[in-house]
Image (cartoon, rainbow, N blue to C red; front, side, top):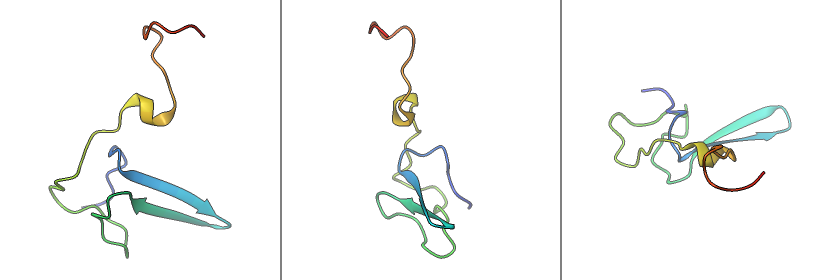
Length: 61
């Protein structure tokens, strides 16, 4: 399986010219980076993980 970009545990960092992909819970293969088939730790990424807020969340601004 490839990378599950929609998982809340997926993270990337840019270091100079390199992009480092990682799984925050360590469930992925390091080289090449790939998520395991049927990963038990998969959780869908929520809109809050991206720093966004819904307009109807009751907060001002």
